[in-house]
Image 1 (cartoon, rainbow, N blue to C red):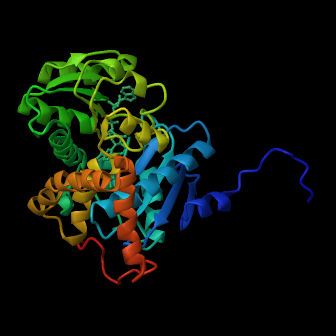
Image 2 (cartoon, rainbow, N blue to C red):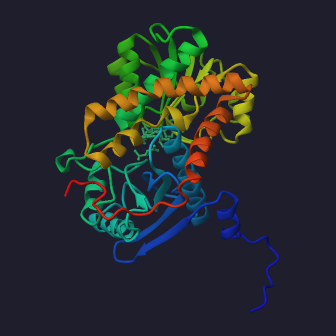
Image 3 (cartoon, rainbow, N blue to C red):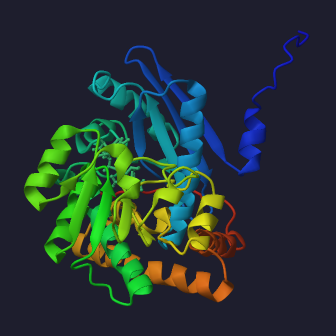
Length: 373
Ligand SMILES: NC(=O)c1ccc[n+]([C@@H]2O[C@H](COP(=O)([O-])OP(=O)(O)OC[C@H]3O[C@@H](n4cnc5c(N)ncnc54)[C@H](O)[C@@H]3O)[C@@H](O)[C@H]2O)c1
Ligand SMILES: CC(C)C[C@H](N)C(=O)O
């Protein structure tokens, strides 16, 4: 048929080729209402491990853009963390408050199983250990399920500990001491990760300024840590030493950077820079940026340990090393005279490149990947 529409067309293979994505899987199941997308970005280092997000996307295009961006982020996160894992991610299009069901997650689990281990799932925004338990009824290629299965459970507290370690490294580099006692940290979003981060910071004697759109979360932070509460749009401009984005992506942008009083940006959120050039602007303004995929790798390091038979002590030792990894990023940035986000990309890309010379595609080993059944 002739094409009559003159609008520019969205060309999926152009998008996939531009960042060299390996595979996209569209998953639909009418009985449960499942509409999901799994994106596998790169399996040079191993199977693609990344979380499952549930979000009420305004359009399918928005969901696809999100999953692609997040999957690529996992390739970099896993590579930079020294894991033998590639990058992937999944999204379910739906309302996490009203659309969750056993059938929905089990239908998703069957799609994960169909990939025979090329993609391994886990928690991300709006998905929980209980959701992973449903997925686990259909596939072994899921991490972060209940500890009763020999798994590691909720990754958020471990992510928080990794962010805390990375923040200390940033403080050491910027202020000459890694003590956070007496420092003021402005925390955007006090959800699963940030509540635990605030606990570490409070215990060390840091002052906390917090914001959230959830009143309950704010009350808890105020009561438990004596945090000062500000409105969501006020958080960027507060007087503080460290700004910790722990809610949304793209919060470091042209509007927010001029407001920042902080000398360090270090938080849990994925994809904090609206565009790469915003990392350059932070650098030009003398603000030290702790690259998101390096500092927030604690959760994936923890769930990845399940692949060897979960050992919490071993996992936490690996998470501790986020401090050293962050220092390495700062050293590379100084050595090469580049902003820290460029140094972090370089660190991840060099590892992938090195391994791609000896192995080009992940091949499944015929044994249970989790070894817990
Ligand atoms: N959970 C993990 O282990 C993990 C690992 C790596 C990265 N991350 C990233 O860290 C971030 C937080 O994850 P989480 O698991 O704590 O999620 P969460 O949903 O528990 O917490 C996010 C919090 O941000 C708040 N929020 C949303 N919009 C806001 C706004 N405009 N202003 C202020 N607050 C707002 C929410 O109300 C919520 O309390 C996400 O970007 C996630 O991708 C999480
Ligand atoms: C595997 C998960 C724990 C991944 C986590 N949601 C992240 O963004 O790092």
